[in-house]
Length: 259
Image (cartoon, rainbow, N blue to C red; front, side, top):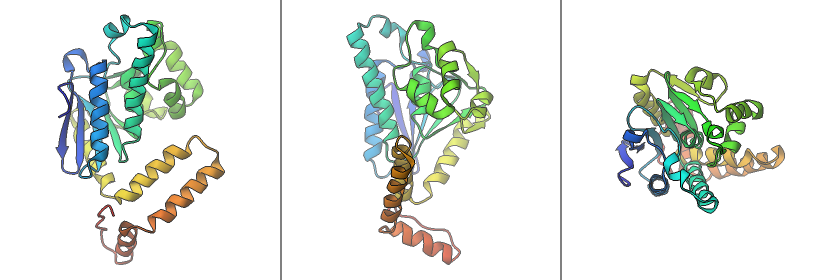
């Protein structure tokens, strides 16, 4: 457990990281952001954890940042708050292992930004998504103006941010914000099963694939492919590569060890 606002539970080789403020719809204040940052860093360094499932307690994933707290902020304090939020999002991206967001209910504002910082989103069929900051006289501050266009395209991201409108899970799936939908009652079991399946692959190759995809996304194709070439070659220095290929030739399941 990492503080009362964030909980960590282990389910075999995956960690379930839960925002645990259901009485306020899991909104993000400074304390909760600090706890999330510590949790992601702890899980990054925990070699027994092969994947992270991020979710929210209660009816909602996360309804955004704490407006009551933000209302009292000076511009300097607001900048520091945004900086902290962005550190959390980068920590999720740089966890070194697969991170899936399991979203039920609302993923608004900072909650949407947190979900987008994960590798992808599995959502309940009843989930709702929004970037409502414009209605508060502000803009997204935890990376939303940058990650949302990269996920769904610039014009659709502008529509969501400029209007602040909510979209349903089905539309989120259609525009590429969400990868999969699940019945609300089966959301966590289905998301956990998917993550465990992913984590049954070669852990080192998963880590390298994640790093190359993320790092290469913002550079030109030629240099990104050079990064891929180098990472591909590194795979051939691992026991997992030899086991994976040997298992294929021998027509059996590979037994990866993360080495």
